[in-house]
Image (tube, rainbow, N blue to C red; front, side):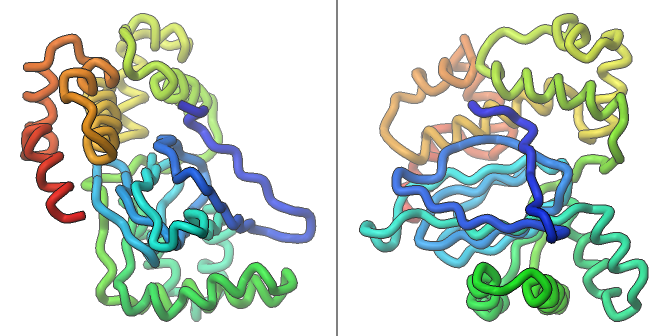
Amino acid sequence: MKPFLERVSVEDGTSWTLFDRQLADGIPFQWHHHPEFELTLTLNSSGQRFIGDHIDRYDDGDLVLIAPYLPHTWHSLSRLDPHRPHRALVIWFDKLWAERLTGNYAELGGTALLLQRASTGLMFSRPISQAVRPRIEALFDLPPFERFLALLGILGTLSLDGGSRPLATSGPEVVGPSAERTRLDRVLDYIHRNFAGKLSIAGLADIAALSPSGLHRSFRRQTNQSISQYLIRLRIGRACALLSSGTVPIGTIAGEVGYDSLANFNRQFKALKGLTPSQYRQNFQATR
């Protein structure tokens, strides 16, 4: 897997950034987070979307808003038009940038509430997604000032979507840059690179330069879950992607995501998803 903490760069003369990501071979499972808000419109693609502990299908036109430091990824399975690439139009903007805007202008009060609601991830209704789709696509052809005004308009429209719904059950505690945040990023990066292997609290504490008890407190404070809960969700999330994308034997998948015991894998999978791995695969294939 690629590094967990994604670095987002901003071009000169702009205060936020956007990216037109096009992938012929599909969107890979790359679990990550970053300190920016992210608005992503996915086109010509269907598969699974992972936001925190939430896992769901997505299709062409899927539009979601993700808060800073909320782990997420997409895993594509098919394209509507096989001759065109999977496409994700991604907008990133800084939390402080958003707070300054919404705090200084009463007209952006609805946008401020929208960003608060995005703490656990927010999926927008189909009518609103379809309405803003051409406006998001048009952003890439606008000069910076007009692009900035257009973004404010898009966020204003999204704030009026009564059909939007939250995704994850909880979001991370959002904090500013600090020694604690840096320590935790090192730990999360290591976990995401090595989640299928043997991880020890002592080893992770060394990476964070904290005592084991200090690491436990810091991890829970900033992720709202324990290290073991986080690791289980990461492993099961990866297993869901593998179960939905082929016919690899379940025992093989269990080993690939870090389980020596198939019984333990089945037990933890059902506790988190409410289904056995085989039932999950059957249900996913039945709805394709």
